[in-house]
Image (cartoon, rainbow, N blue to C red; front, side, top):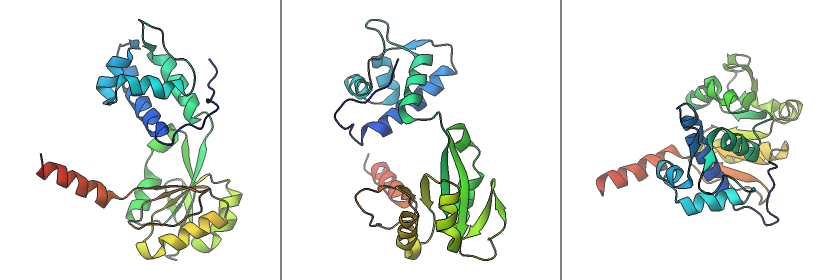
Length: 212
């Protein structure tokens, strides 16, 4: 089966759901289950069966009426959709506690993601190995980003430095940025920016736990 996008642009909201379906399918693959219906997948993924079918329809025809989806094949198709065949190179700025934890996490490469560069302005960290990369000084960012063919830039610096780091990543040719700093960053419209603010997530959980 060839994975092809519809002529219309796929909504940005679709891809996170596709990744969620993939996570569920990868877990199911470890069991003896061979096929799954959209209704069964709906219950596990907590997404409506209609939404699942609609999301998958953006990329072609999946499954057989009355039979459902072959789990092994669906996993392959979902991996094709998100482009996991080629390794995606990551560059991280800010080798503090969070940055170090990200660099040392072994699971990323299993998902087709590899840290190839890391930067910090602290001379005490420069030149040391963290994970599988040697930490470079932030002054080398632009040159190293291009040399290592970095595809995604990750910001794990303080609030005061986050915007400046984002600007430098963009100047270096980065179009996709993941920001862990708890601050609003301004980027040009052609840049894809995703923010992960752990304090917001925890505060949201606190609200729901109190207001159940």
